[in-house]
Length: 516
Image (cartoon, rainbow, N blue to C red):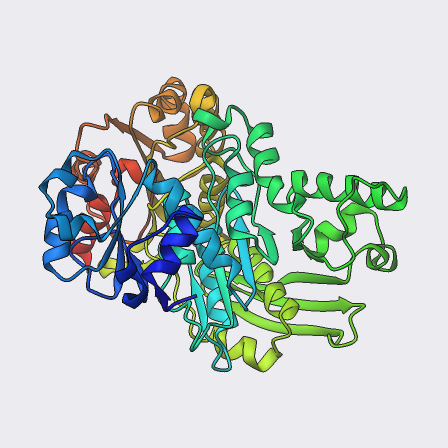
């Protein structure tokens, strides 16, 4: 962990190769990939991205006092450096791979647990919930910033400046994102989570993950890690199936099975009843069963009742533990239950959990509800979209309290669904055709497949549901929907949701500029 000498960093990356003698006296306290934020205490990692090449800023970085840089040995920008500046470079054939190798070295130094969060959707919100809950009682928690959960982002997270040997954190909450076959194996090898959580297994990144089954199996590699404890969310059918397979293998004493004895189960009470296994049987296989139920639900959140059943002597069995979740939808209540379970697994008290949870702030553009002028309600969920998360959002806006309200739904393409894109976008039709009093605004080429199906039944939808249908191409400004509908927004529920690439935050800004 930090601080490290430049020679220690050099050895971690290039192993047995000799470095400059001066490296022993150089002390580094963190990493940076942004040349605008560098200083003399940071290792500058020159990443060549699709838009910018970090090597182009090397000269500027050295002028700012940078003492050490990780660079591509074949970059032409090295020719612009002085001899002294070149001596400050660790030259490698693959900067990202070498950076991840160094991040793995950093991970090997950790004296605190790492919680790995995977799943097709809900990762970032769940990560924020966990980080908030675990920080109660003056615990120091580090976490993945924003949604930096890929090959570069995970390395940056592991190398945070707060991972300091003089004042180390109590835990790291590490978000793990995948978009290709083999990615999870590499991420598990890098992050080595002590506790692993999967939020849900829906269709995602099918451009490279091919189909839903392959995507789910790739995510489940996180749970195949023999060195981790797991928190199983059994309301997800694919997670449940995988769990039951391993319960059976445990019963057969199979050598290939993963051990479940230290694992937790988290499941809504009504789903647990459907599984058909009683508590005593479940607790023979795992350590702790956490059941939760919706005590009360409103358009903006829910109150959750939790019951703890455990074999662990340090965990007290309790019932009727109540928490309020300030985010809409049952899926967010489920995410909270996972966060609660992670705190119990790390021996946090209920008072510490409550204190941490009181400081929770939901991440931007994810299930954020705002009350605007003219009694309008804005549901901002425009950071990302997938079949499972869109289904959850549509379910949330049709809650009992909002059922009769007029609705404006601006829905952008769900990107990166590969050859199954047409199927999943057409599938949205079945949810939209039943929504009443709505202006359905579909945005993007993929959403046109859904629009065509709605258009075929437009007369029926208008007469029975009072639904109007609009479509715009991705080249258009989605804010134009606000004029297309020819109505003054008053008393509307407005949902804006789409993949990040559709840039629907433009609509949010337009709405807020008028109604805030």
